[in-house]
Length: 310
Image 1 (cartoon, rainbow, N blue to C red):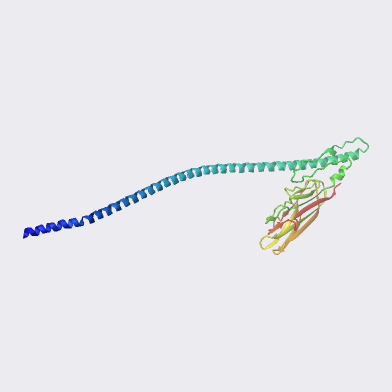
Image 2: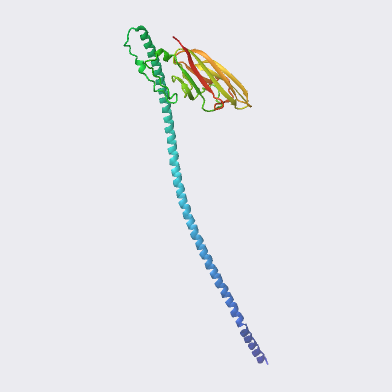
């Protein structure tokens, strides 16, 4: 009985194993398929990672090239900066030398003009004391003053012709000039430079300094007009006409900000050869205004010889 029971149990186990065999094989096949898919996925990710690594290396190379290029450009910029500083220094030195040469040229021109006037006076004196001589030579009549700086008067050329008496030439001098620009808040004790020269018969007015150099002893008339506008709260200020260091006349203006106005000053004075006449803002009084000059109104300065001393 017991032996039969054991035999029955063995057959039952064997039959159970025979019946579960296909299920085990199906499960194993499913696991293997999953492993294959995971392996394929892993290969794909490995390929993507390798591609990304190659891309990173490429970008690193590009960054290195860019850094080298930036360093070269910085070096070029530094070189250009040094060259620019050297050029500025050279330009500053050239400007200083140009100012020295310009001043020397102006001084030589003034000296030549004064020498010419002295020669003319001496020639006139000789002509009066030697009227009987028909062969009196006029060497001054061949003198041309051509060394005047172009910015003062490009057309200044005094030629004493044989038909014009020397005394008539020496008794003629006039000039007229005006601002070509606006001058904002000039401040006190400031020389006004009327840089656009329209009339300058003997070249004695300088458009670069604003100074008229008296050519002969005599009586002169001067007139100036200043157009002013508001700088802060009101336009007011005083202007002086100067002979050397002496104040010969003063004019004052006071205008509201709602308008512009002009002030005119004029003097008739006696001056001697070599005197310097110019216009400046007041040396003591504060000026609070802008100076204007355009088609609506010129800021100008003019003067002329009224009568030369005999």
